Image (cartoon, rainbow, N blue to C red):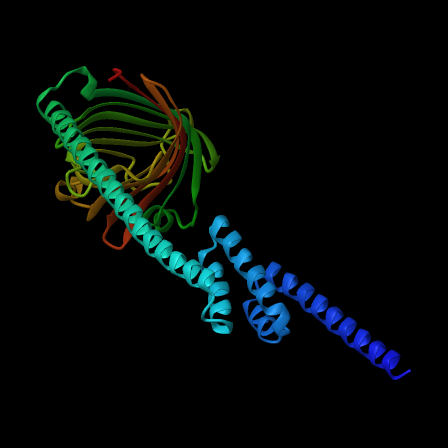
Length: 365
């Protein structure tokens, strides 16, 4: 009876140890699969003495598999786990030494690769820099040649013609006439603007010759009509920061007349014919396609007239290019002409807003 009890207790204990070892083995496989080095170390240290050799072998096999897959750090950690538990494990010692050597070789190989890559990048950069230098030198030579041609070779490509057409409006009055006739009145007309110009374009010199006509033929308020004729020559340069500045001279003719050719009763000066001198910025492009113009002209008839103190004409305008080909471009424009003539404390004044289409013709380059 006692022998049977002893046998039964022995079997139960053996079975418990077997089940415990099987459970630890499963946990070890799971820890190896998830690469949990801490768990692997704890499981090996807590393994029964009879299972340690088996566990060590399992861990070494996992380390070898990691070496084959290229994960040397993990393989090295597993070998260290075995050596911590059993420093006399020759297979773990050899494996650890091999991994260390492989890591040294891998480090040298990585450094060589980096050096080769750095040398290749340096070579590519040097080639790109040399290519850019050659391209810049070639472009500089082309720009130099183009500048030389533009400065020293003058032909029909340097000349252009342009024409403008559009409605013109006029608003005018005279404080002298208001005083003389005992009334205060502003007159307005509508008519047509015609403009013809020829020009010369050069990197350093700009020339313009033109004729503008404002013919106000329909009275809108009042009974008086008017006509303005301006002929002009201008010389300028755009060398000052790309802003085209001009000095100009020409002749202004202004005639105010009543309907049917009769006398007008709106202005002090019915006819003005005088030369002028002026300063202007013309067709300046702060952005592409948009051109800005500002002109100021002094009309020196005031010097010879006993009644006139001062005479001037100002023009402010803008154009926008909406179509272009190799021989012609079209622009839409709007500007304002301002005339003023003073006689002591009185003044004749005239505002002329214009809207027009401008066509520029040139020889193709």
